[in-house]
Image 1 (cartoon, rainbow, N blue to C red):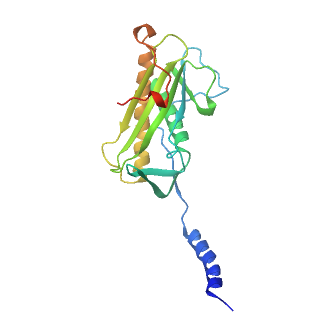
Image 2 (cartoon, one colour):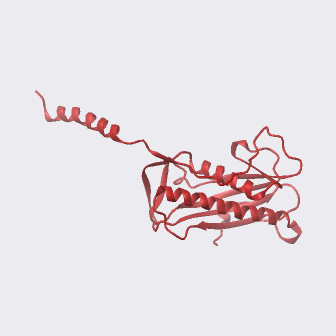
Image 3 (tube, rainbow, N blue to C red):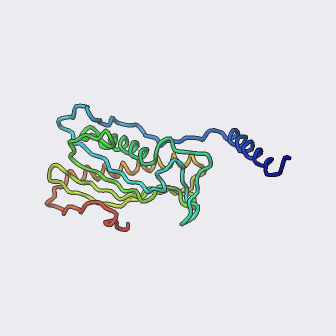
Amino acid sequence: MITVRSLLSLAIPILTAAACAELPPPTLYVLKVTDPAPVITTGQPLPSSPLIVGLGPITVPDYLDRADVVRRASDNRLAMASNERWGETLRAGLQRVLAADLARDLGPEFWVTSGSDRVERIDVEVPIDVESFEPDAAGRVALITNWRIHWLQGEHRSILERTRQGTSEPITGTEDQVRAMSNQIEALADTLAAAIKTSHATPTATAPSTPPLSRSSRHSS
């Protein structure tokens, strides 16, 4: 005897398989590098005169460092873009793009190394702690970071700052969001490059060094 339960047990797998088969492949996004300069890697001969900038470590909130492209639906609620994913983790993409943008901005006087390819000889470290990097409920994207310029070689001024790069106009979709995020990384690179050059030109005697970067050392802008 065929019962309702047996019919349902047959129908559910068939319906589930049909639904899965109809789903299109996800759209993948990556952050864009604008006009990159070379980034040195392990095994590459080090230049004799340029200063070596060690970018990182870079920390990103766990709710952002995932495959989904995240938006903020309200102050306390997140929303995920439907069937749209990052082609790499957000932290990896941010590090890749920021290293390339920073190398371009610093010019030939500096070389940038980061991530798993980071070399051992470092003149200045630039750790970065990302507070947020997603569109708010109004659709405006903001990159809020705490970062430090910490010299390991020479007597130069260290800098600890909290900065915010943001859009004035709301985004209109995921493509627009990713483009805005890439632009804000470029703006952060501009800020870091200026700070590195300024601190390199400023001896420690003219300003006290800053404490190590940590979550407890954050201050409001």
